[in-house]
Length: 466
Image (tube, rainbow, N blue to C red; front, side):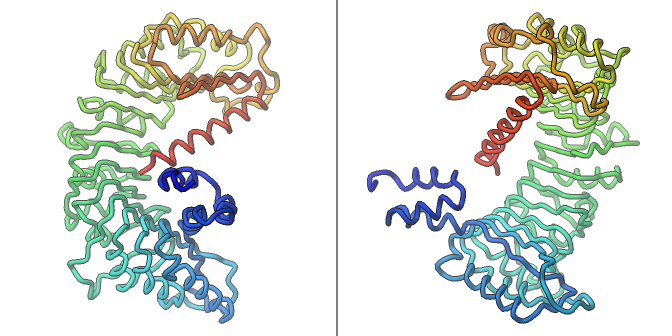
């Protein structure tokens, strides 16, 4: 055991649940020294509302818990901290005040978290002490705030700088520009905001090193453009709620993210960003017909720079997605490595079954890019009556998936992921260091495979996440 590197033990232990850490720490002294600290990497501060005067016994227990987590033996092991307002507190309710004994003690003890990397503050009213100590944390790389978290401006040291790489403000929080005055222009790389209005302020400087931005809402187009122009080197932009730019001149449109690489948002904005020769990834969150999608491409017939496309198309009896459409899609993007296509049909019954079956027949003969390594086709039936979901497909309607997979791999040697999902019928082929192949012919089995897939992909995301 002594010759097994500690780094490898840590990699193994980091994938285990907390209960396993406790068990392992009891089996061997070496494992105790390695596993025990992993049980204290995440700390949640359960605080009381600002309009509550808590009972003394309950407050004393919370302060004692805080003292334990900020003790010299525990605090250095904490890597992530979250404040969470707990409504189980007992006491006398009254007017909201800025005085909060537990939060004040937390702010005073912040410097003890010398290894803290991530902090999410939910409904914390920052004080001068809190901001000063937050800015002094040596390992901090990410801060997330939600609710009432605006830091005070009065008597703050203008030299204070929050040197984090990632910053988030969410849950409807209308942020003023105070946080932006603290954020380091040199270190900030990622931003996630509810609305970009504060970023548009003339008092906010440019952030030349921010490469990733996620916005919940930007309904005010003019202010949004002013805000986005503060991020001249942005590479990845995500607007998952599908807000649309409107009323902009061509000059204003061209000023938005001139070197954008990844776009996630409404298809109505696509005509702006496909003009960027740097663009490689397109993810559309809105539902459109294939004809609407083509219109937004502004007549461009080929996009050799685009390597990843994720789209959702509505199909109808008049606007079906068939051989011509899939051929056009692959012709438009000849160098695709990843395609995620979701179809939302409005027809149902035998007509839908015929369309889905024909899709599997035409796919191998389509002009598939040889570069393709990730292929997903899904049908969403959320707009259907449940009666359309009651019966699994007939045997005659089930494709020979191994044969289909072999034909696809023959045309696309780089292919390592295939996923077909049409409610009752599912096929998954995933080639990593080994091969995972699964087929389902009923809803229950398909559901189980989907859940396993979500878990596997979530695990992969955790270990590749910023």
